[in-house]
Image 1 (cartoon, one colour):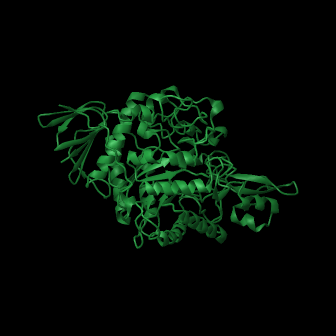
Image 2 (image 1 turned 135 degrees about the horizontal axis):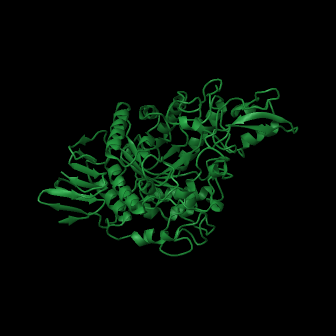
Image 3 (image 1 turned 90 degrees about the vertical axis):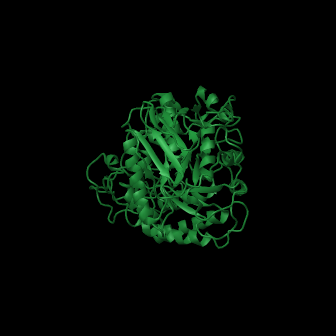
Length: 573
């Protein structure tokens, strides 16, 4: 008997779902990249009103929370990660009233809102930095950033040998108000993104105020960009040598993952805990007296998952992205090692594991898994589209079966591939325009998503899209997949509904591994069993009580199940 348990899920409206303490421990959180999600005014750029209009879709998809990439006032030198005003919405995305309406609508629909916070650096158009330049050497405002005199006879050399993540020196020399070459300032990313000096008390005071501003607006948490940054080693020592980017994620750097960041997060946690019992729950009920309703999520690139665990100790942040998992190929042995290490590292600090396969900075996993292993997370080739999608669907079911919280990136529920053939003249990733550093091909995962089969932008908006969409977008759209058995959208909807219904899924800190053929992962969680075949050939495994979901069609007969290549199945045991 063939089974393919991905029939369209019932309408799983969540507006009446009862809020529960520590919701984030088993939450499914959906990342929205606002400029590429939905455009309400036809200018080709997504906006907050567009996001607001599509909130019912996210409710029906079955996610618990929505994380919004930056929408703050910004010159957009790095797609909004260069913030000029942390308390204002960029006109490109709307107004503060639009943000307020989005937060209120999300609450009524049973969705929580998490916003990005960018504390490592500001825009060079931030009022502090503009005044620091205008006031010249000795300005108190320069102490809030890292201004230093240069080395060499005339100060013509950078203060140290640090390199920018985007390539080239991490220092830029300024022209002083009198027109002479002057001091240098530190920017670990683009020159338009000067790093704050977190040793200065005014910086900490400002960000505590920013936290309160958005908490008072009603947000449910913050995703902290470059959470491993902010604090620099005393004296800003040379690192030695070049090609420093190759060391990232492999060692503690003098500008990343310094122990001092944890003091900042302990202070922030006290603020969040003040708000934990305020306001209403997602269903409108009073949440007075409950703790754990608002959260911090760390984007912390660290050498090991054990160091990542330092960020989620009980008095610091709540979650940290699991980049070790994101960077693991579709291979049973490698996946099991990362899963075990993650759960083992998080257990002592009492934090939930998190799992993620795609985001706005990496090639979509439907494309990564269609390429050969060992190419990293930024890939320029399309690979085998059919194989990549098959593996991506299986990988998603595996991820959603693991204990803890899962992150989905917009469009992955449609099986979108990375757009790897964008013409050079349309690219907008700032890293692409620099001679060194990152590949600069992040535009491929940021192409606006399709909602309808037809139209100038496949339903994204009435005025085209800021990045060109491929012709295949129409057949991958929400309209094309909605209600279609076996479609990737219906697979996600079904899996998320089952995940919510099964008491053994979601929160937890361990799995029970089961015997399985080589290349197959099988584990039990209470009355639930997951079997994932990562090989290129079918495998036969025992059948369990009832098949819940399968990423491709499977055959069940005489107490055994034939699981096809690159397929994951969920069972009750």
